[in-house]
Length: 350
Image (tube, rainbow, N blue to C red; front, top):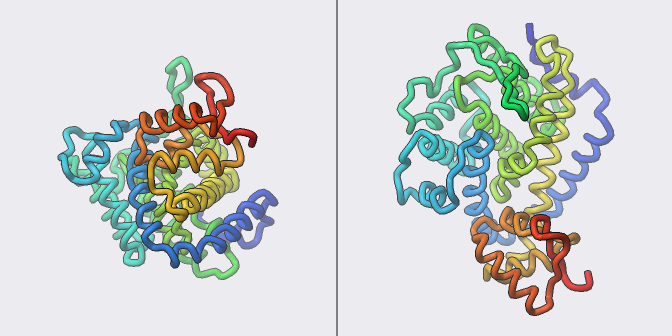
């Protein structure tokens, strides 16, 4: 039977690459904290951008995709959801807003986790929102020939409630142990949640919402300003590989948590790095969309693609980015590197 015990984070030797990621995150977090206090309006603007990216990306990971125009309208509540996918998008938005604005009021406990799931599913009208699964589920893999295979068998429905209770108690015990890093504990808990797979639907999105809740409660709030979910979506092959490796022998209590932990930490670090890249541009009064495109290219240490610019600035349409790049090329301020499909841009002479 699976045991939930995070004392290995205290007693086992932490891999060097994991320690390097921890140090890098703490360093960049400390450097940037003063900016958030000094320029609240800038960070409010970034938060609006991140919410759009988070809702879109977390649902896209599950294959739920819609247009940028449509998702902005849904988030602004100017239109009503018209199908099941859009109902789940609205539900995710509502839970995300609660976590962004009121994370101190919620805990990793049965009551709050079930309430998040109930709200997430509430617009669909299905009755399974806010309750643990009543049937066993499996996690499958589909290969390039569309052949499916079982990748992982989660905790049975019969054992789910007890497993979730043990997970939550183990988390609280480790949380109160001073020499266990919260940044190591959080992804360990999320991995166990995903392996239990406690709900009939929405486990992946719930795991990302709970990741944000735990990060915010431990003062790692970068996901408010740079979409944590979007970075997972961009690098989802690495995310799934880490999850796959760390779930091997999970039921036998001999799994290696560190592939998943390292992927989680890399995602957090990428968010912090991008936050302060964006901050420098907005903080320098570069609010004009064309100017933001220009500054993104000019300030980048390496050539950037149109897709990268769009990921940084989802409020700027692809057409606007394309037009701005065309003008910058014409003026001789930037140059193109690579072919059409792989084209990137950099400052002339850089």
